[in-house]
Image (cartoon, rainbow, N blue to C red):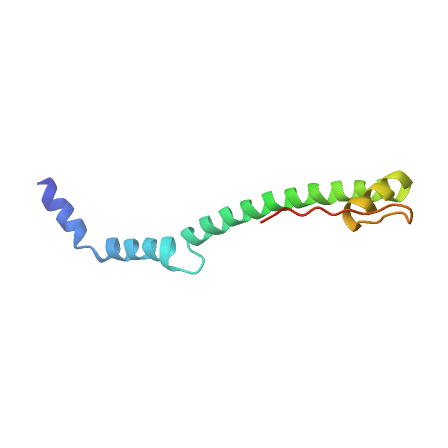
Length: 98
């Protein structure tokens, strides 16, 4: 008797329309639950990147402020990054052999 009842429900157009609507909303629509889940994951990853870049910007601003104040730090930075030398010094650049 139970199987016949389920068979009767299977013939109902309301069941098939409901299932079709659930599949449409869940997977096929442009604003489906699947798309919303993927977009939420992407947003979380982008928010993590945003916090990383905000931290890097804060660190660079601190370095900028330190470079504007300290003349010894300015000289060290110029020597390290731009190979600046004094007129009385000789600059020797070593490159690794390939």
